[in-house]
Amino acid sequence: MNLERSLRLLAGMMILFSLALAHWVSQRWLWLTAFVGLNLLQSAFTNWCPAMSILRSLGLKDACPAPEKKRLLP
Image 1 (cartoon, rainbow, N blue to C red):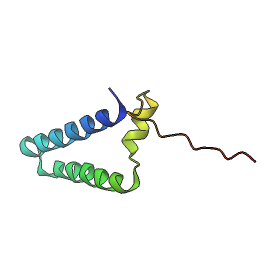
Image 2: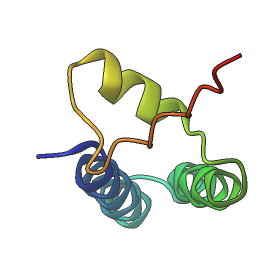
Image 3: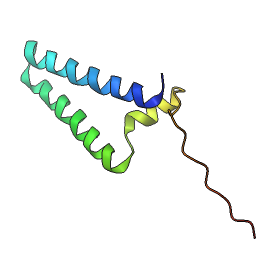
């Protein structure tokens, strides 16, 4: 599984988990849902997410690696 799919899986699981906890335990768990949503929103603009750093450190690879920058010869 690549990094992007793992990140979507993690975000979806966190949202469903927090909604279940809000339903059966306490509505304060909805703050976790809001945090995940805000994190997804900011990552859309910055292309950085703390979970991506963690997943990369666990060894997951990007689906399409960024193209290498061409070096200009002198």
